[in-house]
Structure formats: structure tokens, C-alpha cells
Length: 103
Image (cartoon, rainbow, N blue to C red; front, top):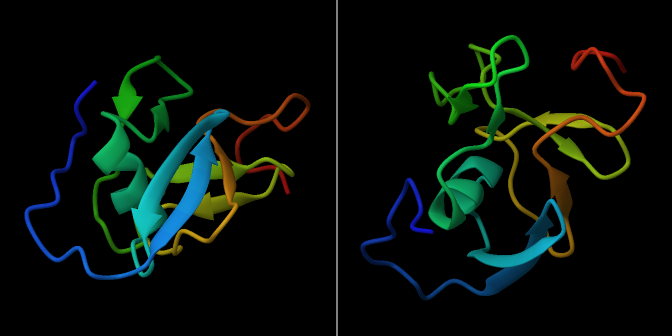
């Protein structure tokens, strides 16, 4: 599957390994979670009220459209958080963590 984003250049930063729904991926140090996920796939998550794919909207942390989950259940905005080594991301809330905004 091709990604929503394509990296056209600038590949000299160190690689960072992370996972999305158990799938091992890599990004570059300094990539946001959104960039890292959309380089590897076509969506960040599925819209909880209709099932449509979501890939972010405003790209600055205001619209609430890019929420993803860490494996421990915490949410983060994919457009403003940086991918970290070993980060385990989920595209749907972990069991028992619904609604999506529950902390």
C-alpha cells in the first residue's frame, strides 16, 4: 500500500523505529506522528461516527481530526507530536477507552 504522503528529499536524519497497530515502521527523527503514519499508509484513523478514513485536517492541532492512541491508552494529536523510538501507536482506542476523549 502506498502512503498518503511521499518524501521527495531530505533523508539524512537518523531513522526512528515505531509501530502502528503492531506493524513495524520507520520514520526520521523530527517527523511528526502524522507525517510518519501518512508516509506509511493512507489514514491516521477511522472516523468514530461513520467509519470514514481520517488523515488530519488543519495540520496545527486545532481541529481534533488527527487523534491517535498510544498503546497505553493515552491520546495524542498526530500533527503536533513527534514520533519517538519504540513508540507504539493505535488507530483505534484500546478496549475500554471509548469515547475517544476519555482520559
